[in-house]
Length: 407
Length: 103
Image (cartoon, rainbow over all chains, first blue to last red; front, side, top):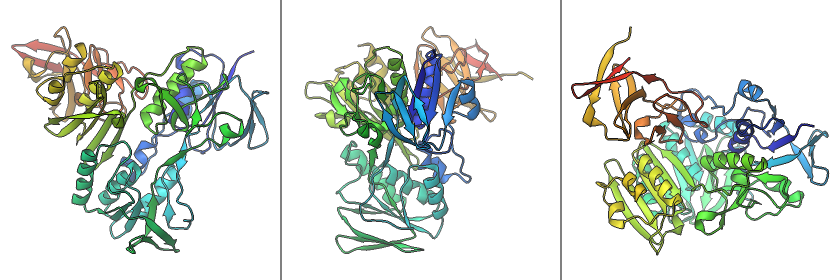
């Protein structure tokens, strides 16, 4: 009888896995279960170009034709009520059962909610519907308050300014992007937002948010009040682990998987935003990455291992953010670094982060357009190899990083 | 009708590298291989119209700077997600120290 592989979650990781199974030559049945009714779509544009573009068009990862061609049965708008691990089948929300031989959980993450804050004028950003609602509220003469100086909040702030809206961004900590982005780069991003007309409020906690029918008011601990047409809350995301947890799978800041992305049930794997995994390049440090590239890499790795490859993930974490004309790219985890070396480029700069014993562990770059992309990519390769590059060479823009790869 | 246009000088591109050339409303990418052969493709990635010349050339592969979509620049072949549409390639000749592309 032909094997049936089921993927729960039709975001970047799930959709990639579904297509990846065919690319790997799997000839059994593939079912891709999505909670949203849309075909799989790319989320990165929702806060960036998709928010600024005159006409909103979702960027589909796999069209209905491509899914059909690949023989992937897509079930959109479906919910999964539970996993019967002994019987190897899913209890679907509509009461039916879906048997599986191997199961991939790619359930993603959801915006972290601000407790006790509800109302018409409060929005979060994760889905096409959220993006469309936000788009409708951004325009000249409108005012949006953004709670949280992370990537969602900052990208949204830049997009809102591009559409002519007034923006106040409130960050409880003393600076932007305190999780994972070096202070020097966060400072440059803050300066760009100030120059772009965003009002930045630091080090002030939210005391309360009132949402009326037409407007909202944010009250801060200092007593400051911010009136806005809409309040976007961007205070991080929490992994969707409910299904795995109810099935008795181990949870550790996400669905806990090993280096091969297998859970403690050998027939169930997890990938993408929902999964926490040990990163070999940092001595097995357990991390959970909310990024597009990680979703792609893990979607691919999961299918190879569902097919028995037994491969340990070796990707270096990588992500990017676009704000105004600037692009930020980070390879590796900057907090692993003890020593920092700066390289100035014509239209950007890069910080190389090295461990105390001289191993390159991360690189953070910011510049106009893709000015830092090539060097960050080379840094990613050096990090993956555990290279100990010469510090003077790293700091000297006249030395080509590509040359260090051969060393 | 096909026409040869002068894209750049031989020495404008380093070995195993790429540059962007804008000519007559087109964006081209001109490559110099590790064996110092020249190649040309459309200059924008088929995924999100990003300039490939900011990307990394390794051997015969160009990698998009934005999302790491990979193409073989000699054949234009897309090497897998996120890129699934091949890159258009152009014939190239080198004469008198200049690189010409047939468009």
